[in-house]
Length: 245
Image 1 (cartoon, rainbow, N blue to C red):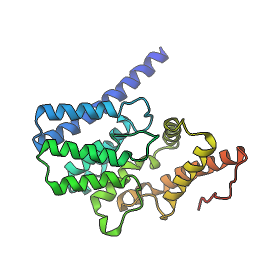
Image 2: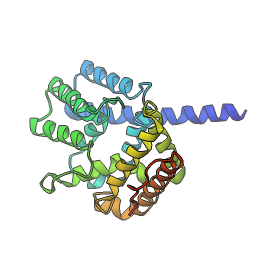
Image 3: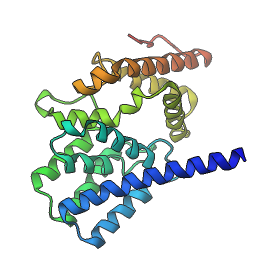
């Protein structure tokens, strides 16, 4: 009976996820007057890509969680179509063994925008740039910053501000995606990445997310860095690069 209850709960989550994915794709389809065959083609691409076997975190659940955050802050967003398209395409190509996922995702979006032919070139270029910027969330030039962009980048990293339980699930799923990387390399590289997020002083770029979620995000990220540092010590590796300040 307990197994059946868990199965039903899991199916309910899947249904809600697919409901939001379909809902917001239809918003895009209607707003841009996308032809049925093009819409069906790319919705299928998105569903298929985000359901690939190598994904544990970067799945449809990830973009669904971004839609939930979008709903939370949508009154602050100016270009809703751009925002939604950036969510859909930003991780559409994801191979943990490669280093050009963002570029390939942006290229696939560009293919979509050309086929659609109802998206202004300036808007298409902006979305392309937003996708590229998810490669290094905090390495953006002041001249590049606009309100929608920083909200989008914060929405992408909003898992940082989740509950302790959900954050641990997130970090476990990242490890599963990089299971091909040996422990000693993974723990050190992952710690470097998480430390880099702290270098700017705060994790979230927008006032909205910083004011509401910075404290919880800092707790989660610093806790993961401590965990990784302990793993590095346990493996007898050099822990001199530990900086959790």
